[in-house]
Length: 79
Image 1 (cartoon, helix red, strand yellow):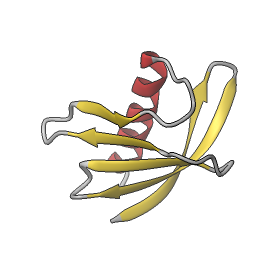
Image 2 (tube, rainbow, N blue to C red):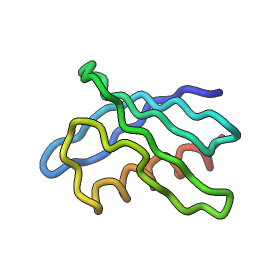
Image 3 (cartoon, helix red, strand yellow):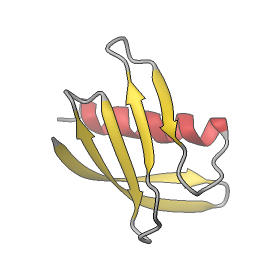
Image 4 (tube, one colour):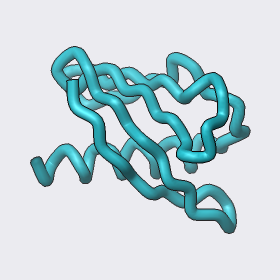
């Protein structure tokens, strides 16, 4: 399990989040640094396809989830 921070854009805001990756980087918990309850939970398959297990309380669009997933992938590629 690894934990790292990311910044991603939601409409006109840039949000900071703490990401916890587990199960060989296939499961992700995304917690906003504002401390909101019910974090975003994402699953990434071995072939790189993403699935939203729980969207959290923020009302993110599909495009914003894709940006978040790309931000996580970009960070993992730097490891």
